[in-house]
Length: 454
Ligand SMILES: *Cc1c(COP(=O)(O)O)cnc(C)c1O
Image (tube, rainbow, N blue to C red; front, side):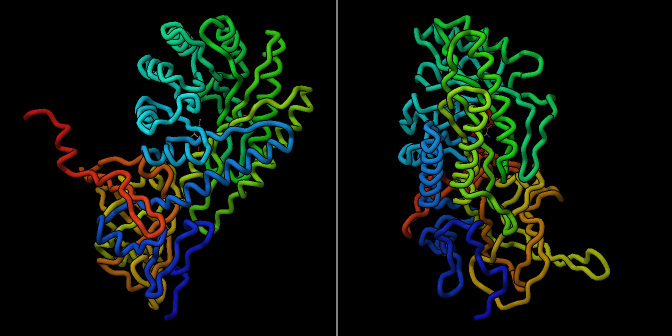
């Protein structure tokens, strides 16, 4: 059987277990997507459990080892907002990572999973009193504080519960990084963190240190962006944070033992994406931190990082069924084939939100048909409802075929909606040829049940 380019599965984009069966279908975790679609329907988010576990383990080992080389410790907090459910929280815990949550809902999932409170971090720029109270009651290991109001709220919760709450201060370093570029003087004009420039960080630190009966200041935190492919932005942010941390520590004659460099480690969505290997990323970050600390004349603090996408993104594949195929004459000499699938912007809003690129493959068979320029679109009432903007697919793709979109493990289910009253797809885990439902398919009855009597 001859194969078109679209039949090959680029190793850095697909889960390691993804392969073609002898008769041409894609299998993931030892499971043929045709059998999977027959069993649970489409669309479906497929999570390769072994891929999640392996990435978590490799990421943690890379950072632990790289920082041990410079005589320091590093903790890895998985950013739950990328994708979270009870099973996911358990995997993360079993693989030795900690967990960041950023709402009472995410905290409830962590609690349901039995995630130890001491290994949790709580984020968010506007945590409610109830969220802070629940986190303090559960004994979260740290709260990353984002406003002056919150300093008081967390201190009050600490006093209410008779505990000293470990906190970090989120700092607006002015560095913003994305893919291969970073801006050293990014706009201050965004909601997260205390500004360095206006002395806010120092004032906030003083407010925290004034309340040592209820608050313990661990250090500073910054998160510079997402889908980052190199370490230049981290280097700039680390230098600023380490200097600032030393200034504040000296001013108050204390030590600030920890520093969090945030997340944002990039993954490959399409073949041309070339993220750094975990080992290289970790080694470069360790060198950056070591150099910045040497220059500032301060010991290396206990470091933490917060990958979300890098752990779960490449472990997810969405399987859709094709419903309609329409050639569109775009210009005199260019025809684009529009392939409509049974999901779209409600299960993956990233193309609409961020102009994100994805790729896909014909998953239920291979084809010898010549590849044609294709756009895969959803079933929503928006012309911007694009799943894969540009991909070459075999020209004979037809209704009933299955398409698989890789790298949908992060920020797809977690950002999903029920736009157009389309129920959200299930999330299934595959491993060793077995499938397990993590989150069942939503039904129209689920959605209608939210309405009041009418
Ligand atoms: C979103 C976020 C992360 C994770 O970002 P990824 O791009 O998924 O790695 C980490 N830390 C903070 C504070 C975040 O807001």
